[in-house]
Length: 415
Image (cartoon, rainbow, N blue to C red):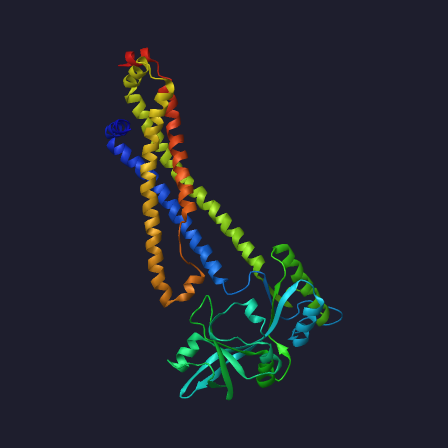
């Protein structure tokens, strides 16, 4: 085995510069393939990270204004959801699992604790909210059915609000003033995607009674009982038709309702990333092909320069296959060594980028929603290794066939 390796190295030493340049082109191709695949993975991870805080089979609906005349009614009418919409949807539309109405207090509401004071976003929700838009409970509890039914003045604060108002004090059981009204802190939560989010959550019934004075809700959010895009889309269409009939607008009016179907969006994004991944593989492989051509050319030159040697080998009884094996092994050695170096450099650059980004996330966590953890996993490395082997075999095929066809008498005469 060592003699075999020495023979390969001795042959390549005769064409050092050519071998180095050819190896560089192969290494560069694999390096760029790893970098491109890792970057594509980073974009996909960012998209998936951005959706970590919401159920994958969720549908969210915001009311708009009608853009079509319908049943004698003019366009431009504002659609307004109410508690009755929530109750009727849950009862009459099949396929809905969890459903909540949400009320946003659009102007930031002042929250005060002792001498600490600031304005924060307040959202009025029902207990189903936590099964639709996920929250990490740090301490205490979430809003429950009793809080909603009895319109209790309780609230759940995000960790960043607690840090601002309470410092090192335990907030559970303490009372804060929310818009001048005392509310009891029952829980502390954190968003899975934004640790710096400053949100206060109170029961929907309390928010409507204290701040809104009506039964209106700002939007509807639900999860379905299905895990396929087609079934989710069917529920979405049923909800649209129900709301269109109830609020008297055309179900074809796209501006009357704004719908975000999470599963549909995820599938579309995955399709886009699959297309991007295919494009990256095509670009990477085309770059590697340039290296393959270089390896093939250098092997053809080596075969030509070693015509006499190969002729003598065959005259002494070497089989055509042993000659083919020799040339293929030399070709495979160049591509494997150069490709391995390119792969290590690519993985090293991605690892370094991940370490740098981890520091950047601390200062600007929102970047994680766009680009997160660019990496090339074991599957990518294995795929690249397979590409290398195939590339090496392809690069050596033509010169190997040429070497195997050499006739001993012609090779000796060539000298």
